[in-house]
Length: 267
Ligand code: ADP
Image (tube, rainbow, N blue to C red; front, side, top):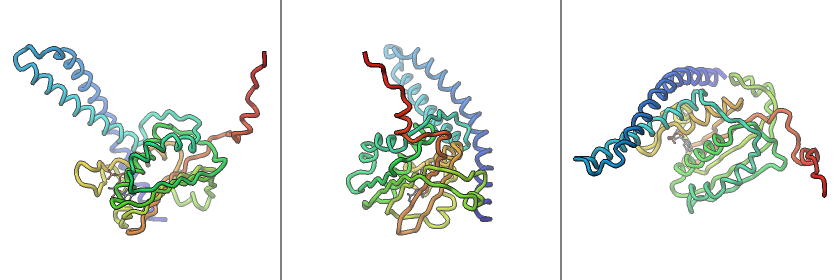
């Protein structure tokens, strides 16, 4: 319990710090990007000028670099929960079905996918784009952990977190949640890696292969949505990441809702 509290306090502190920096940085980058775009428009037809092609190349490179930097700050803002979320009632099963081709392509031939979806899964109120990006990040991590192939399982369930469970975590409420568990049969994590996995910029991947922002972005998004992330991992066995998203307040079962919808008058 102590260790879990210490961990969440550390994440809070890191979040405050990075959030402040990322926010200011992002504002500055928007000025840089705006100016470079202006410059780009002006040199768009500069081929005739002496060194015109060079000018265009420099501007394009600078713009690409600035956009990558802005993308990084956006991911940091997601971690520190300073990103505006567009939360809407979301059907997780439907969202996942819509991603199946993308997941298939991301994971490649050597990894099989199994989806175990609960019937009558409750709806949640989340930013669907963020949830998609979270699931894609988890799939990419799973793929990287299974270079020789393996199996990815995505399971969803309605679940109730009781007071004795939530008491172990800062700021988590007891109640009804939708759980999404993403499991792989990959390398797993050592204790040290597991402890730090959600920290921004923590990565064990080679330069150019990981930014260390995937799990921190997920952590921030889920926390901001009022939910909870748990990672279980065993070296040589695999990893399970569980996302708990609070059930949509005042939700009604889907068929009940269909009953409530007015039937169009027949002509
Ligand atoms: P990145 O993937 O860019 O390294 P993440 O924040 O997504 O950043 O992950 C941080 C680290 O956590 C990874 O570098 C890896 O060591 C570990 N990790 C994450 N997911 C898994 C997984 N499914 N299996 C094994 N290790 C993982």
